[in-house]
Length: 326
Image (cartoon, rainbow, N blue to C red; front, top):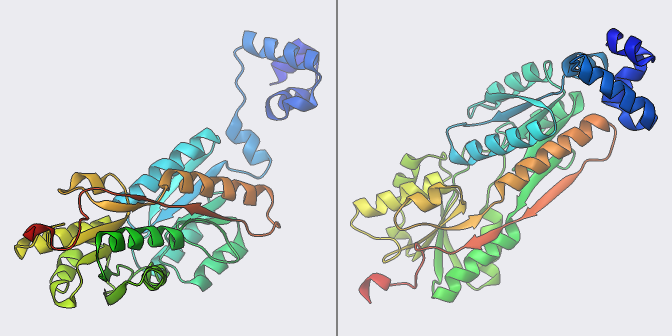
């Protein structure tokens, strides 16, 4: 930098501002510095500049299960957005134990400018502790005092139940997959949607862990519920429900219609392809990164929340009741 400053006839601080705050330097001076820098093959050390300002330009992302396609898509989208914002990314898989998640978050907070918590298993008090200690934003979850980007499930669930009701389903079972989740999941939106459309929510099975095997276990309980349609908490559970029903000699959608929430690539890899409540994971993840960067720049600002709309994607797993006998 000193060589560029000497050749361009300016101070080292002016050279620094050309690369960090170019609008604060006169256009002719800025161009002269850039020409000299190009001739001398000078590239500013962004990490050193960040550290000088007390920043690492590194964000932390914590997910409960990186092998879950839902979180895998969030990781990919967050990484893409962070790179576009010239931020590095540290990733940690916390598992389902809240204490482990909190310990990992505390350690990562010391090495980053802020934390992104995707579907955290930590309770509200733990998340608040992290929020009070430094910049934090939630992805796929909402907490009043913490910046959050999440899906608005209320309207989406009404679309799901209205679709099933229009097909003639009057009794629905919901397979709840939130035994290890921090929030209550989709139970309330499902109930409210059923009440609105005159559909009976006959049983809420679970809560189960979010795994294929637990979906299979839930499928054993579905036929005794009297329902003709199933709403599964996520695609891993939905795949298990479909597999469990097939082992019983029952079919989807012939014997039971099946709807899932998430709509990652997995919804299209099963036969029949799953009707899904689509959550815009790419947009939600990018919004989470933006909220965190705003919090880093404005640590004392009011909490910001981004409620993202969902949409129903109708595929082959839903049909009118008794379709197999028609």
